[in-house]
Image 1 (cartoon, rainbow, N blue to C red):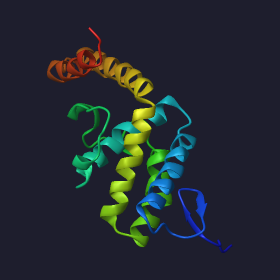
Image 2 (image 1 turned 120 degrees about the horizontal axis):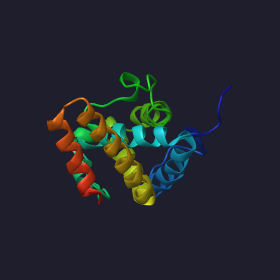
Image 3 (image 1 turned 60 degrees about the vertical axis):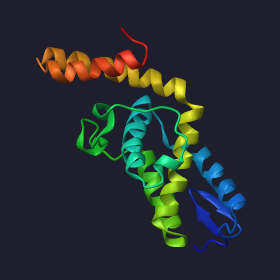
Length: 168
């Protein structure tokens, strides 16, 4: 089926954006679709840590006002498909296929990454409280697992995360 217009992130536009104002409008519309791809708390958690790992690698990351920082132990190199989850995060997949592929082909990878970073920052700003509660819950879980397995150095790293989020 042929689509009449420009489809990105599940949103149909008359044509590709040609101005900064139109691009910002597109990013706002697609950013609103992010939550639709997060069915569970686990999906949200893995989206945050995976997308944060991608985000900090973007050349444009320093140009984006991000609402919080994360510790390396929380995100660095972590992917849901290589974890106990054993499948790709639905929102990462959505952004990879429904946003990045289209925007990279239309503009450039650098511009697509900048837009993805902006959408991620907007999403995290809007959901910061919920995200930090999840980060705390998982940090406590991982800390306790490290203690049980006598991985005290990793337990201490998780304790730093817990303390930074207001825990004991």
